[in-house]
Image (cartoon, rainbow over all chains, first blue to last red; front, side):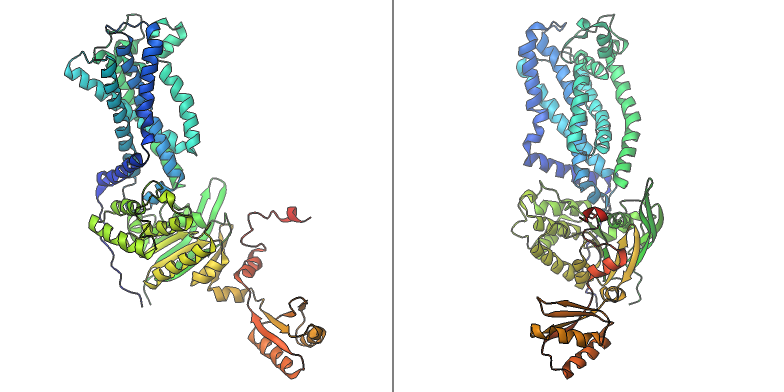
Length: 275
Length: 325
């Protein structure tokens, strides 16, 4: 009675291949909507220009080559911190539209949904890092340290981006809509990335604010890449402890954030999608 | 046909905190048949489907799909079924073909196979011309058809459809029904949830009626209609003037008669075919001229009303007394 139908062979291609299928889909999204890249292209370039030319003249830094060179590490830190934003928006949109459910109903490693999203977000942020580096070169930023130090600075940025992915997954799984993600991320990420040494030196801030800014994890990251690229001398001796050892502190922060947030993020994602 | 059921639910229960969404649902679907799960919004249909398709873990109870336990062998279940969710979960920024390739790729199918199967599916769902267009430009009906096509890329033997035609215009709905009938003819086992009684009537071999998380009735569409037992004989007289005489004649046979002058119709509650033949012979012996005489079985809508005390479609929007002026 039942006709014989050809059933294809379903192969378990493993987490990596499955994640790459999802990455490819996310890349097609960028191809179809290039404006999705504005946050890592036009926006940071605009920030560089605004700060370098509007405020730049009035901000004194210890950088041998002036404010513009000093600024670049700050913008890099801000751009990579916003990686969390990118992940959260993408994830919430996929959950909302039922895409995540559809993928979870397939015979794939459930982690592929998150890994695929994370890899595309890191690619996304890497574009920002490249654009920033090129913009920097145009306005006078140079790498003045050793090759090893320069590479280490880029590695720190990517590690930071990796830690931010978990924050993004946590926020993306918690929020019910893309609008909510936008609201939460704008009201938290902007103050956090500004209340730091990103755009202005901390020395001239009021005492309490300075203390906050210097303990802000982003300040350690920014100070680390500036030092490694030879864009700034080490901080004054009265600066907070994290800034005295920025590279080590950044390692500790990225590992710490990942260790604490990742399990939380995975649990929240599971709760959100399994019920 | 002695093969084990393709889908089996065994006392499925799901709690969300204090709320009991599904409260002990059991049913089984023989291979190659269609089960319609009928119920109003919020009855627990989607939650049941989510448990059967491994998306949600049951609080208690279990289910088997193609012989695999949804809790112990979720991987095997996912390999043997396709799911089309309530919203058309296709990717708007991808073309129809890219959507098929995405899901085919996740199944680990070869590129060659995906290309060939995509051609077939697009053709079958009348999407060949739209295949290379971005889904954003598709109509609602096209999205639904693509959604279904995507669920079929790996030719699963079991298919779950959660309200497949909600929000579609009547024509698209009928078109989708045709495609589903074709699938069943080819041997696919189907479980579909619906709020539309007509849809269950049209497609399902068996129906389970769900209300407030429990199965309140089960059977073939015909059995369910008989169960509510309110068949009626409808007599249409040729001349309005004959109505009183016809009423008198009917009352001699049955207790309850309803008259509608505008349509020249008399409706009498009847117990089935036997009542109808008796009434027919009485009228044949009389001088009253008739346009029509027939047995009207209750619709599934009547059944639902009979079973639950409220209508299926407006179960959500009718807060009982408030609507009474």
